[in-house]
Length: 349
Length: 261
Image 1 (cartoon, chains in turn purple, green):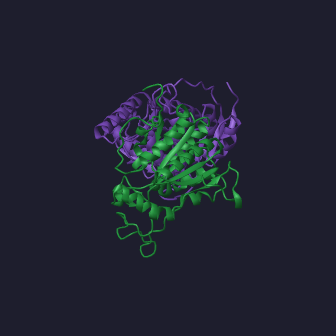
Image 2: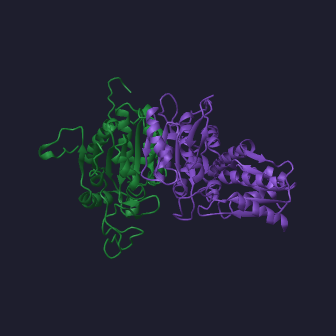
C-alpha cells in the first residue's frame, strides 16, 4: 500500500494516468482543467514520455489518434467547449477502433458559458459526435475514485479498442482530497493491429472509411457487438441507503456527494431517502432504476444542468413511479439544504 | 529473364499492385510512385507508416504496400505528430492535397512545421478540390473557374482570396529543415522531383521536411491530360515557382541562397 497523498483532482487524474502506463499527453489550455496539461508537461518527461501543447483541441485529439494507431496508451483532457472540438478525433477513434482516454472537466455553457462547475455535458458525453458510436463514460465523485477510475479507463479503452471519457466537473478538478494510488498491474492486450511498420507481416491499416454501404453496415454491426458486450459487463453504479427508501435521489459526480449530505440530514428527521449514483453514464444502469422505481414513491433527479441525465432515468423508470427534477446551472452548485427542501415539499404534495 | 538482362524499370516494392481510382492524366500516381521509390531506396519499407488525407488520395492506404493510417480532413500532421512522439524510430509521411493541407488543415501543418516534427509531408497541389467535384481550393489561381468560383476566382469583387503559397509560408518559420516545391509536369521535372522527395526522406530524422508537388486535375479543370500539363506549365509554375527553399543540411550556395534540388 502506498502513502496517502493530498492532491488536487486534476493532478491526481494526471498521476493516475502516468501510473497506468500513459506516456503520451496532448492537450490545449482551457479552464478549469489547466492543471492536467501543466502536470503532464513536467511529469511525462521525467518518465521518458512526451507532452505536446497542441495548437487546438482538434489537433490534440488527432495526435491521440496517431499515438493510439501505433499501439501506445495516450490521454488528452479538456473542458466543455474544448471537448466539442475533440469530438472529431473521438469519432474517428471509435470508427478506427483506437483506444484513447479523454478527460472532460465540465464547465457551464452554452457557448463560452462560464468557468464554474457544471454537468451540462451529459448529452455531449453520452450522445457523442457524428456517426453511430459510443464511448464509455465514467463519472467520479471523489478524488480517490477519480484516480482509481482513470486507471480502469485505460484498461477499458484497450480491452474494447474504443475511447473512454472520464467525466468530471470543475469541483472534482479543483478540489483537494487525500488519495492512495493503488498498485497498478497492466494487463496484456493484443496490439497486433497497430501500424508500427510492416516488417515481417502483411501491412496494417488504421481506417474508418468504408465506401461500400454493405461493408460500412457490417462495420457498424461489428462495433455495436462490442457495445452490447460493454453494456452487459461494464455498468457501474452505487446504490446508497436504498434498502428501506421511500424516495430515491438520482445523481452522479459532485452532485451525488451533495445528495448524500442531504440524505443524512433527511434521515436524521426520519425521512427514508436513498441514492442511485451511476458511475458509468454509458453504459447506464437502467436495471437499477427499473428495480428501485417499483419500491419508492418517486425519484428526484438532481443535476448541475437543465436536466440531461433525467432522460436516461426515465428510460430506466418507465413510468413505474413519478420522476421529479431539481437542477442548478451556470456554475451554481446546489446546497444540501435545497435538496432537503425539494424532497420535503414533494413528499408534502 | 536471362542472367545478362538488366532491369531498367520495375514496380516499387512499397507500391501495392492494385489498380487506382485516379482519373486519366492525374498525377497522383506519379507522386505515389516517387514516395514508394524513396522509401524503397532508403530501405525503410518495414519501418514506415504513411498517413493519407481526405480528398482524392484518401484511398492511398490501398495503394501503398506499407502500414497506413487514414486521417480526418487536414489533421494528418497532428496524427503524424502523435505517431512520431510515440515511435521516433519509425519513418512517417503524410500525403495531402491542397484542400486538406492549405485550408482545413492549415493550423495542423503550420504548427507541426513550427515544432519541427520529424516527418515528411508530400503536398500535391493541383489548385482544386478533386474528390468533391472541382470546387475552389486555397491554391486556385486568380481567374480560374471552378464549381464554386464559376466566373473565375475573384479576390476583389467576390472576396474569394488569393492563392496561398505553402512552401513560401512554411519557409517563414524557424523550425523546418527542408522545404521544396517541385513539378510533376514533365519527365524532366519528375526526375528532379524524385531526387527531392528522396532528399526529404533522407533528412527526416533531422526534423520537418516538406515537398510540394505541382500537379494537374484534367477532369475538374475540363481539359485533356496533355492540355492540363501545358496549362499548368504555363500558369501554375508562374504562381508556384519550383525550387528548394530550404535545406538545412546543405552548404549554402552563393548569396546565401540554397541550391535548387
